[in-house]
Length: 214
Ligand code: SAM
Image (tube, rainbow, N blue to C red; front, top):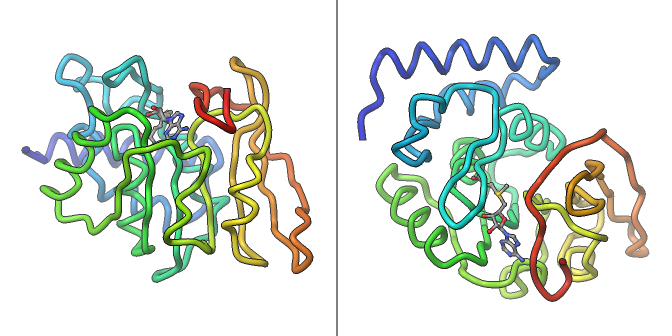
């Protein structure tokens, strides 16, 4: 579990690339500068871990492109101590970035092997996060309501559980579309539980599978 000067240098370059691509949120950039992304990679792809690309992890899933992580995390507008629910723990990288931002993180993953691996790695790196193995299309009822919900898999539509489990005034960031292409939606929950929606552009995610997914 080494984080060498070479890794740190590559990470700095990646952050510069993200700035060139328009990411402006200083807190998010600082958090990503600190998280050793290469440790969340499969050994065979580790050399590519500081490229701005998505890569395969186990079980046919992917670790999201750094630009996507930066864009979603910026949209989330976090503050230390707020409660955030992530759907799709995957490698645990996005969870680590959120933990680095000092939110109280809850994250759900439906692939057992990924859940277990992320749990082990995040513990080892000292990140305090709460992980659940299960169908995240139902949210995580026990700890609701959340200030923020971040979905890192593409949904056909917004599951009702996410709306129900979000606090009024809370933000939901979710890619919505077909199984190939989605739009990044930021929904703001109103006092009467209706949503004000913003469209933040085109993205590509693996599908959200589950009762209220595909
Ligand atoms: N956030 C992850 C990371 O930092 O590595 C990347 C997530 S990957 C693009 C999407 C993840 O969502 C996959 O690990 C997939 O198994 C998971 N997923 C898909 N449907 C899900 C569901 N219903 N509940 C929980 N996780 C789900």
